[in-house]
Each structure stands twice: as C-alpha cells, then as structure tokens.
Length: 287
Ligand SMILES: [Zn+2]
Image (cartoon, protein in one colour):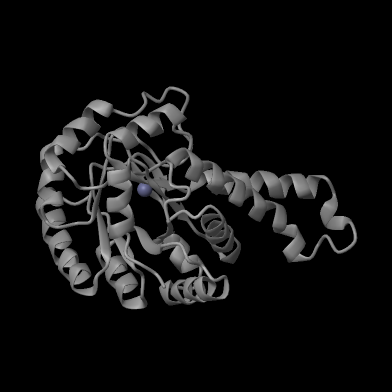
C-alpha cells in the first residue's frame, strides 16, 4: 500500500540520512526502482512529473500500475507516489487519482499567491493523510519546459511557507535540474543553513540530485536535507546501456529484438544507479 512520505522523511531527518525520490517514466523504470528499494530495504519515493503522467496515459494509470506492482512484487518497504513540480490543478488531479504525496510548485507565483494556493492544498492533503511538498526559490535548469535560473531561496519566505503546514520544503540553494554546467558554483550551504535556522524541524528537499558531488550531498544531509530528487541520472544510465546493446548488434542476434531483452540492460542500469544513490544517501536498511 502506498504511504505518505511524512513518516519516512521525519525518520530520515532524525537519522541524518535522505530518502531518494526517483522519477518514473514507464513500467521498466518503476519496476527497477521498486526492486532495488526492496532488495536494499530502503524507503523510496516514486516521482511523477506532469509530463511523465501524461506520457503514461494519466494519473489513474500510474496509480493502477504502481499499486499493482506493490502487490504482485510483494513490496514491504514504504513507498510514496509523489507528484513532482505539480501545478495547482495537477496536484488536485493526483490527489483524486490516489497519489499518496504531491508537490505544489508555486515558486513562479508571487509569494502571496503561493501562500494562498499552498494553504488550500495543505488542508486537502492533511484531511486525507497525504504529504505535501512546497517550493520556494525556483530551481535552475529545465523540467518539462519550465526553465528556472537556480536562485537561492529567501529564508523568511521559506519560514512563511513552512508554517502553512507542508510536510517538506524544497528551497533553491543553487541546485539545478539536469546536467550541471562545468562552471557551476556549487550548492550554497550558507543559504541552506539560513533556511534550516528559519524552518526548524521541517525536512528539506534537494532537487537536481544528478551530478552533485558526493561530499556536497553528505553535507546537505547533515544540514537537514531529508529527500533528494534523482531523475536525469537514471535517464542517462538507461540511455548508455541501451546504446551499448544496440551498437554491439545484440538486437540483431537471435531474439535480441524482443523488447524484454532490448530493454533489460537499461533496466539493470537504472537499478545500479538507484543502488548507488541509496548507498550515498544512507537510506539502505532504513525501511
Ligand atoms: Zn525538481
């Protein structure tokens, strides 16, 4: 059964580790992530962007697939199904469809409007026992066509949003989505510490986990980050393994064209990436 991300993140915050949010795109992605979480006895959050939700034929399809897998694969670790960077309408649709967690990304609204909309969604989520993530300070890079510049969040605004009763808070600290450019300045731990001082116990979320050096990840966790989002890295691992398979001509050998064979190396590569991240984040054995 899907669970809210609240308990797993509070435990992570107290235990000084982080739970990974791994974004899903299809059945193979979901299966690989769930298999790895179960093998490593790690809690996990499956992230679904609105674009990926559309791609998978809508939120109800996603909920049906994930719930089916939890049962058929006999998953025992805590799993949350979470809308990533949701719009106001998207968050409502996911709540309706059976997601156990949503992110409302109101970072592009003026702070007053972000507050109003977040307040309403917090009430709905609290009534239903779902977790809700809010964002302050837009996160750089591109995600589903939305481009942010990677600003640092205003700690006072973080406090204002945290006080609305959200479960976890994403604060921009110089992190960006996708691959990091060579001239990236790194995470602003100064901002992270200032945010932490304002919001107290609130579990913090680090977006754009792909390619942040391990020492920065560990420092971020020590300063209150309890959820780290990983998306691009699984895509790159899948792409590289699939390319190797085809370039080696294996799709032309025997029944190598069978999609179950063709997609297998990519699925294994996702598992290896998820394992590596769970080990780095410290969530192994914490389920
Ligand atoms: Zn993000």
